[in-house]
Length: 117
Image 1 (cartoon, rainbow, N blue to C red):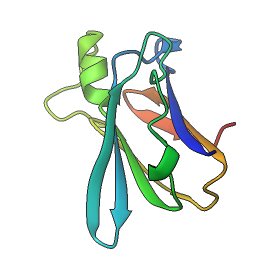
Image 2: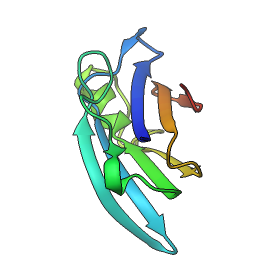
Image 3: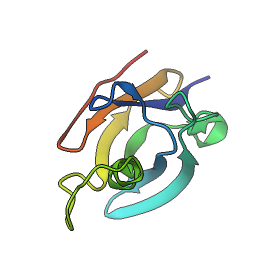
């Protein structure tokens, strides 16, 4: 059975991104429905898949990571308006039996993602 997982790595400090709020939305037309929310653990991962079981189906999804809160908590000076306060990744799932892993590498001024395994 398929599932959706994520992993956050802090590229600026060379460590896992721990205690980052991650929200998952399902997108249907113009509507965003929040279907999961979690905090990353000390390894930068969520303790359980964000999506699995009957809720896991093909469609368009959005992950939202609270990067600004994370960097502020680490003492990084971001200014009044952080360049990357919320990192939003929109992606599609087209195989409901597959494991989709979406890692995020972040710094205060850049991010990178890919479909992992």
